[in-house]
Length: 289
Image (cartoon, rainbow, N blue to C red; front, top):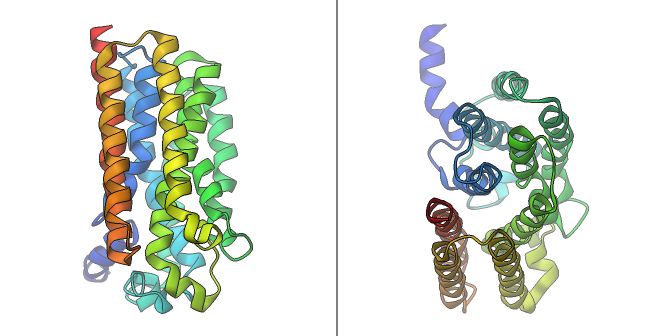
C-alpha cells in the first residue's frame, strides 16, 4: 500500500499543479492585495497565514475539479493531454479522494475565521465547482473564473475588518477584469483545439478584437486600483507599482501581435509579474504612508 502511494506521488503533484505554481500565484496576489489593504499594511499574522494556505489548498482542489470535469476533453488538447486524469496515470477515485481531503482541510481553515468569512467561503464553493462546466454552455467561462478567483478579496476584508467596504468591491471588480483579461490570453493559446472539440471561451467570442478588449480590461483594472490608491492617499510607491504593472500589460500586447499560441501562453504567464508589481506597490506604499 505504501509503495503504491509513493508511486502515485508525482501524479498527485501534477494533479494539484505543484509543478506549475503560476496559477496559484495568480490566485494568491489579489488575496495579498486585500490582506495588506484591509490590514493597513500590517495584516494579522494568523489570518494572513490561514488565507495564504487556504489559497493554495483551494487552488489545488479547484484543479482536481477542473481536471475531473475535463477528463474526456483534455486528451484532445495539446497542452492538457498529459494531465493525470486525462492520460490515465491516476484514477478518478484517487483524484476524488484527494479533492475531498483538500476541501475538508479548506473547511477547517476557514472555520478558524469569523462568521462572515465562513459564509463567503461557502458561497464561493459552488462557483469553483460549476466553473469547469461553463465552457460547454457559454463563451464567457472566464467571467465565472473571475468571480471564483476574486473571492479571496472579500474573505480577507471580512476576516480582518468584519465588514465589506466599498474599497473591497472596487478591488474585487479590478481583479475580476484583470482575470478575464489574462485568462483570455490563456484561451487564445488553446483556441484551435477548443474550436475542434466545441469548447467556448472569450477568446473565440472576442475574435479579432481580443487583444484590444484585453488591453481595455487591464487599463480599467489599473484605473480602479489607482482610484483606491488616491482614496486612501497611499504613498507614491503604490503608483510606481501600478506603472510597472502597466508595463507588463504593454509587453503582453507586444508579444501577442501574431497571436501565436506559445506567445499567448507567455503573455498569460507574464501576468504573475503584473500581480507582483501591484502587490509590491501596495506593500511599499503602505509602509511609507
